[in-house]
Amino acid sequence: MGFPNVDLQLVKIFLAGFAAAKADPTVIDDLFEDLDDTDRAAIKQYLASLTVTDDVRQRKEHHRYLYLLPHFPLSGYPFPQIGVSLGTEDSAERFISDYTGDPVPVTDQQGTLIGYDQEKGYLGQGHWNIDVVSATKPESIWLSRFCQLFICESQDYLTGLGIQEVSVALGDIKLEAQQTMQPSEIFNRGVRVSAKVANTWKKRLPINGDYQTGINQALA
Image 1: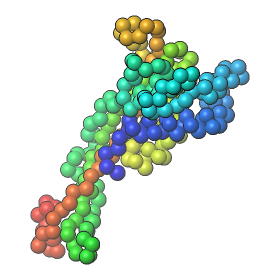
Image 2: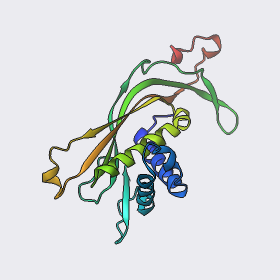
Image 3: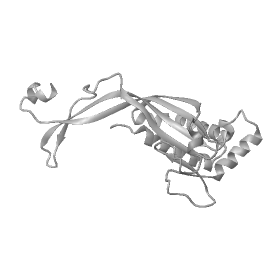
Image 4: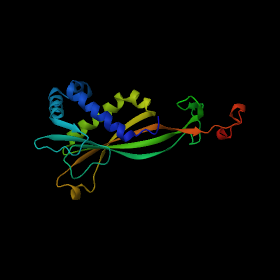
C-alpha cells in the first residue's frame, strides 16, 4: 500500500465527484432534500456554471472556476476554492518495526533466489483539513456538503488504499486576517477528515546461509 497521500487522494475524489454531479445533477435533489425546489434549482444552476479544475493555470475570461488544491487556498486567485492540507499524521496502534506479513521470496530473471521481501508498517492516525472558501455563505455550505458526500461515497476506495475508519466533521472558520488579505468579505467552512492510515513498506532481506535452519539473523 505504501504511504497513502490522503490530501492528493481527496482532491482526486472531489474532481471525480463534481464531474459526476455536473453530469447528473439529480444528486442535488437527494443531497439537499431539506431545501425547497427553488433552492435546489439554484444549486443546480450554480454547479452547472462552474468549471472545476485542479490546475491554477486555468484562468480564462468569462469562466467561473472552482479550484481544487492540494494545499491551502491561494489569496491571489478568485473564489471559490477548496484547499486540502495535512493537519497531523503520527503513528498509532502499531510501531514501525512491526511485521505485517510473511517474507516473500524474490528471484532474478534467471529464477535465482536473491532475497526475501518483508512487509513492515505501522498504523497512523491523521487529520486533514479541507478549507472551502467562497465569496458568499451559501456557496460554502453547498460545496462543503458536496465534499462530505464525496468522501462518504468513497469509503470502499479509501479502504483499498489503507485509509480506514474515516470520519468527517464540519465547522465554520472565522478568518481574522481576511480584511488585510482580501478587499471583500470571504467565507470559509472547514471540513476535517480523521482516519487511520496503514503506512507500509517492503524491506529486502539478504540471503543468509542459516535461513534454511530458521536462524536467519536478518529476521532477528
